[in-house]
Length: 87
Image (cartoon, rainbow, N blue to C red; front, side, top):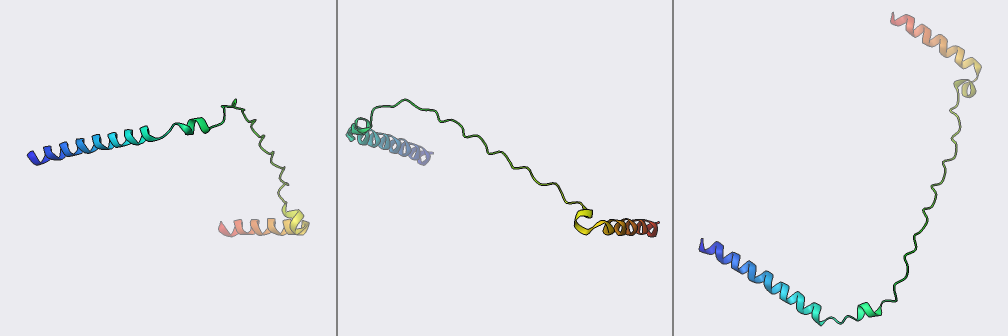
């Protein structure tokens, strides 16, 4: 049990040392970074840009328009003959 307790003490000492070191570094830094900044300006809220409207999409092409009026007659005959063969 003594070994575990020594680890705990070592860990506490290390964290305390790191905290002291960090405080020392921050104390050494000059506050010139705050002075170097320009005076605070009023925050200007930017207007939201309107989303571009989607252009209308063309209608889907019909089989008559693509293959002609004869193709639709053939397709209906083919589909009806396929249904008859299934029965």
